[in-house]
Every structure is written in C-alpha cells, then in structure tokens.
Image 1 (spheres, rainbow, N blue to C red):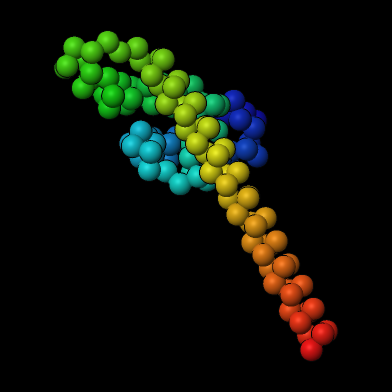
Image 2: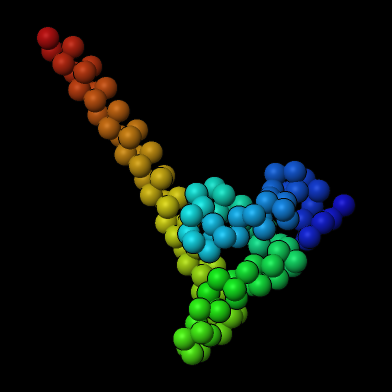
Length: 122
C-alpha cells in the first residue's frame, strides 16, 4: 500500500498532511526543533500536495511583502533556497549534537581514569 509516495510503514512513523500544514508557519519562521524539522522535510520530499501547500503559504509569507515594495521575487528559487538552508542547518545541528555526545563520553572517561589512577596511587 502506498500513499504520497510512502510505504504504509513509513506513514506510521511519519508526519501526516494535517500536521505538516500546521507546521508551515513555524517552518517559515525557523521555529521547528531538529527532529520536527527533519520529519517536515522528509514529508515535503514525498508529498506533492504538501509541497504545493508550502509554496502557496510561502508566497503569502515571503512573496507579498516583496511585491508590495516592488522587489522581484522568484517563488521557486526562493523556496528552494529556504528548503536547502533548512536541510544544511539541520545537518549541522545533528553533527554538533553528535560531537557533544562524543565529548561528554571522552570527558567521563577521562574523569573515570583520573579517579582510578588517584585511588590506585593513594
């Protein structure tokens, strides 16, 4: 069974249309946490109707103010840039999170080693 280009199993662990649509304003304002943003982008990649909805809301959010001031605006290029920036930022945040975990493990290992050596030479 397939839905929006996703298998049935993927749907069980993925974002639905209603949630996606509710999160669009937060996405456009860069207010989503890493996990939610990753799920949002995954759903965007697989769901044509949600891509269209995001385009419409992006036009209203970013396009109308530019049209009022007379600036040129290319919807698809601007939206593609926003999506790509979100992907890069999300990846950077995940890498920083992983690095933080590694540093915590190294710190705990160093502290544990120091305690063992201190107790051994006491």
